[in-house]
Image 1 (tube, rainbow, N blue to C red):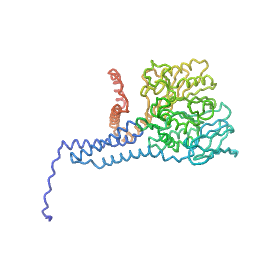
Image 2 (tube, rainbow, N blue to C red):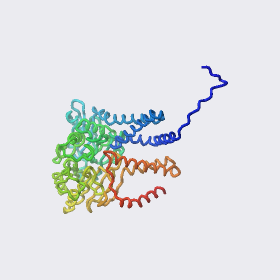
Image 3 (cartoon, helix red, strand yellow):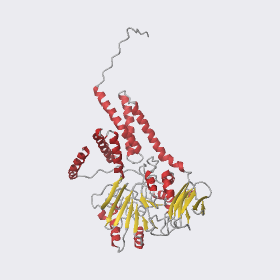
Length: 555
């Protein structure tokens, strides 16, 4: 074809675009640009909160369907950056799948050594050593004296077991070395009035949030406590799996414990701090309320015994018992009783929401454990008697779960009977309940002479419970972790956007909009939350508070 450069062909006219088509498409693309960061955020959280799985997958599918529809029907193609977002999101999902399903298996050959009970004359270690043949753990004191214990463990217990060193010297520092780790500890003084510092808490979500550092555990180690009581949710076996969690797959429970034990911060803490353990629901499945012979209780608790519970004191002394997981011990001037709030429940079919209908047939502890606890309280001569419960006792905590069986508020009859009994015993004083689970810190007066200290999480996120509507206990202190992180991140976002001279109202409006959409999604999702039960009178009562809150935020 020959083109005359002096007389080029006239340009072809561009067909006019329909404003009815351009405007909606522009708004649609603008909407996706706004939605992009929230879509990515949902993918980041998808393996931390189960309902967000629906949101993450749903948004991804909607993007693909919309792209195909625009291309086939309107002969349009989405901008490349939206396609990049879709590809990045899908790759992120695969990365999280690898982290949650494949990476736990990478620690099969790992060896671990942790420190458990330490008394004035003894020390107990937990060891995992998967290599064939015996292994040794050695202790060396400042005087140069060395003690060595040699053992080998069976693959039927995933190569885990305990070692006990006895006849140690009180108040003496020992260095130890064994498979995979080493450290130091100091035996307790023989004087029972020696100062005692300990930490109690729960909840470490590591395998389901791609969390590499456990800063909460690092802060515990910095306090150098004499020991730690870990009140459950050491692993989150049910997140993000929907329905039956891990089911009967014992090897997966073991793999999740190995991933936690391989974490550098967890290893640093448990190698240098004597630790006592109890399990709660997430070691099994969320809000577990079944009988011990049901699936997945047996494999879940077996893995917990192998990795954590085997070194707990048994009621008769020695290693951890096979049947009873609750136990008690003495450290310094304090006596401690650690409750098992999962294995001995009665009346699980009863509706725990109807507290007035409860009686002895609805129980969290069971008859035998309750009798053992009461006998221990009467026999204790310590100034403080600490009762550790994975479930919170305060009436400030709403009962939740399918039948309101979670928290002691769902077992109101048993709670009141126990507290009435403690108050009615002449000379029984200094009872303090240690609890966790809520992802909040609180100090409550359960009765005039009975206190509760609730502390969690070590390393997890979110807020688990809200205040009850009535009958609250006296609150001395309360702080939700979610509120704390919200305040910090909110201030950072406002400053990054220019502070008061930036876009504070725009940002706050977007936050409210996203929160409203998330609330609607939570009510619609199969595993979300039930619709709130509010009346017109409730709405009228909330309007003045809402108006004042809006005004304060605008100011």
